[in-house]
Length: 72
Image 1 (tube, rainbow, N blue to C red):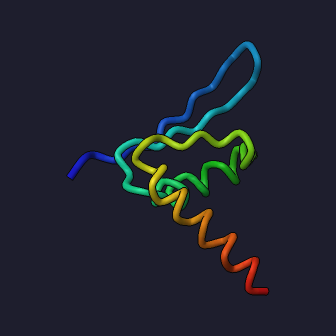
Image 2 (cartoon, helix red, strand yellow; image 1 turned 180 degrees about the horizontal axis):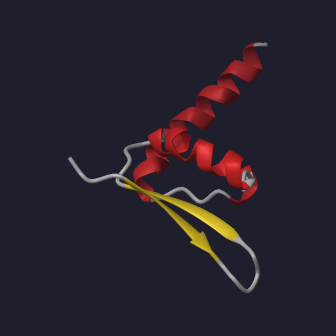
């Protein structure tokens, strides 16, 4: 099993904060980073970048959400 880590990047010049999850499978990174995002106020879904290991589940999740919306 790969070691998991949460890395927080601070840009002293711009004040920008980025949170990076490493070693997580699928979208489990979202649950792991959520407390940090809430505490630091860096929750911007539109600027979220998914790594290749999350892309497969992200695509499936998006399709499921669209299917649920069509049924309502």
